[in-house]
Length: 117
Image (cartoon, rainbow, N blue to C red; front, side, top):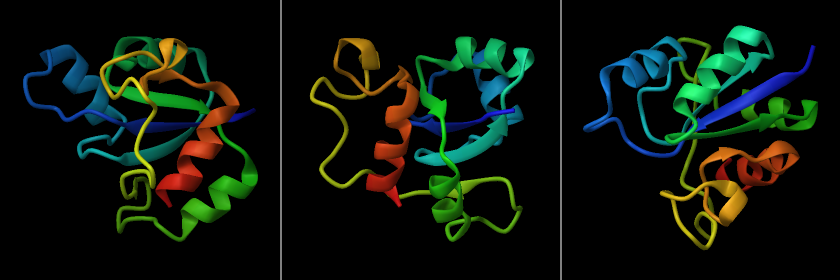
């Protein structure tokens, strides 16, 4: 089973209630918080719901080991710094596919996490 890293990019102010509940279930309550979850059909459904507020993708084992050093006390959430050099050119309101920072970024999630650790 592969692991998926999910990073909250945008804040929760003014977010629809059902989307906020999904983010809370995933323990994403602060900007730049990251969780690593096992891939499953239910997780894919959650990712579709929150794709306009987070970025996600399959994560490598080396990146998971680097994240272990940043773990919070509850053992589920990694609190990261904003990325060195900033997010992509179009900012945090556009999808990754059109040059922004949101949504599924595939293997490039490892590059983003390296900039944030």
